[in-house]
Length: 247
Image (cartoon, rainbow, N blue to C red; front, side):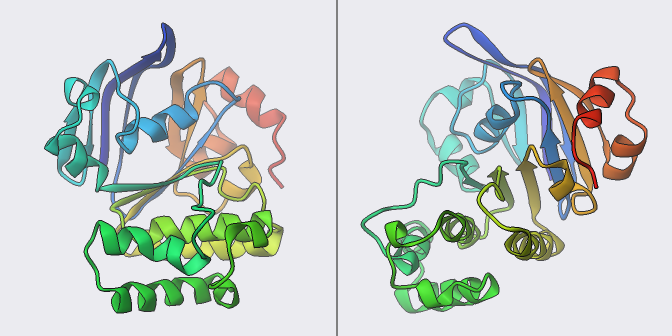
């Protein structure tokens, strides 16, 4: 479960998040939509403990991070970070490692799994997204869509309680987007929580359990996907959805 209470964050005097509060149960998928520059990615950065915040708190699976604890490297911060995994829009794959090595690096170094165990689990993930034949290739040898799938699998390999993705299908064709959607649904069905930032309302529709709409660094509204898309309460949400391709 994720609980966010009164979360505010700024960088160099610019307010990025303003008093955000929300709660999401385990096993659920949340989509976050809204115009660019309104705090969507910032929420992900705070949720995974990579961006300090000014006030409020975040609780993931019983582990709480307070604002003052988010600003100092400590055992509390490291324990909080281990609860989550994130796939950035810029994928940050290790260019000197093969696909397989990219996926098994963290399970071996952080989770202390044996190489045999890590490789076995990685191959199962690669097979699910149909890229097991690329296991010995380097990132520069892959297409953008293939790299994106590797980055998603690298995050999943750590089996985080919460998985966060920033525009996870930006380089994927409709078929591969469907594969990723199915994989994330299976992951959530195992009791994990998934948070997805996306400009593609079409991708999120009929897939995520809840939608949150962000505007001017504030949470404008959050509801079930069906209710938010069919009966948005705020005019800013209605205007945004009018310009989104929903079919």
